Image 1 (cartoon, one colour):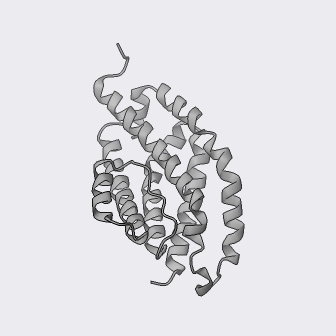
Image 2 (cartoon, one colour):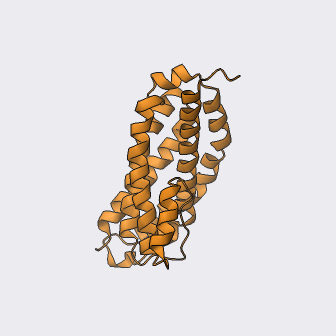
Amino acid sequence: MSIYDNSSDADRRELLSFVSSVYDDLAWMVDMRYELFSPDLSTTEGSLDDLSEFLAWLADAWPDVYETRAELLRQMSEVPSEVLANHGLAGLDLRVKLIAWRRARLRLTRAVLEEADAEDSDEVFDDYAEHPQAPLPRPKRFRRAKRVLKWASRALGHADTILGSLAALLSQAERLKEIKETVEKVSGEVAEDLPD
């Protein structure tokens, strides 16, 4: 028999799934960095030249951060339920944070599907709505990256409330939180600079 009751087991699974999704979403952004951050940037102030260093840094930094995934998930699975609850990572505290994050992430998914001009995007989106933490689709290009970057920034921003609490509890989460914050800020800045 587990030392955790059913609700704390469910909370822990939700928290582990959330952290896995943040890693996956950041991996998606790293893989899609040229499609996201360099479409038609020659028409904006600053152009791609300002982003080339960031894109190179992101590609170099991400593998080391991604390597922390298994260890962070292992550490999280060992934290007592009471400690998670005391850090706002269980029960209603966790659920309300997840609701806000999932809402923004679902809007990110819709933006990816619509801006990729995916066929039957509504049908595909309905599948994602049923599984809100499913991996993001990987289109070859976006018609407009502005909306995708805006919702990526917002979804990553909503992840802060959970990652901040987690980083206070487990120092291993700090690297994930820091790269997420950097990608979030640059995504938001580029979204603002891109034309409508």
